[in-house]
Image 1 (cartoon, one colour):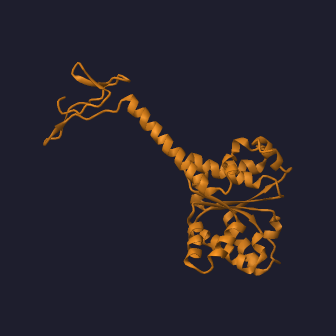
Image 2 (cartoon, helix red, strand yellow):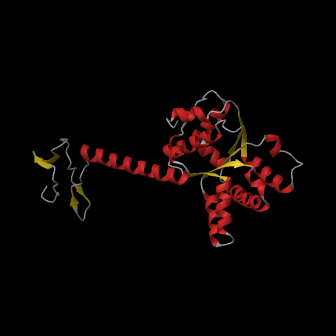
Image 3 (cartoon, helix red, strand yellow):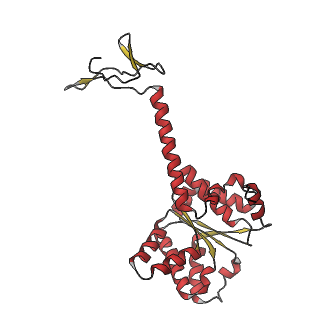
Length: 259
């Protein structure tokens, strides 16, 4: 044992080295590699526990970083399936199963389209999916309102920054775009929205959408060609899910002690 490097908490006893805190032997069996011999060090319970604590600390830091990148509001960090109010609804079941089956959904490039009235829980389900994937799988997700994205692209003009924004949105493993329909304001907005959606379609990246529009509006062949192009592409990429019921936002606020 003369070449074995002792540490602060090591103690020699009966020809072996032990951790004096947990009592576990830390010197392994002599290894003969031909050109050299050495005694490997075995991790004691203290080291194993410390490593696990470090790993957990790093995991929590990574989760915190992913959530800051994903959400616009810190409140959304707390929106989870466990706290969703209507667990019996079909939309909840679809969202929950989507998160649990994400790897297959990713492989098949399948997204979701939540449509329904204002306040029916679309954003909460979006956040629940995002939080589940971030916390359980450390997957990069970004949730944005379409108006935010359009504004960012407009401010970038025709610079390289504009191309970077579109490339970044196209490459995120899961992108959640809220308020589909806001792009109807201008031809420029529609073009930018289509660029982002089409890049994700080509790249095989799943996307989740929410809208207050009726599904029949998205399927309407009488819509202008620009709308048809956007909506037909989206419908190729998603499973439409109707969310119905009372406005849950006030109840959600009560659950989170906001009001």
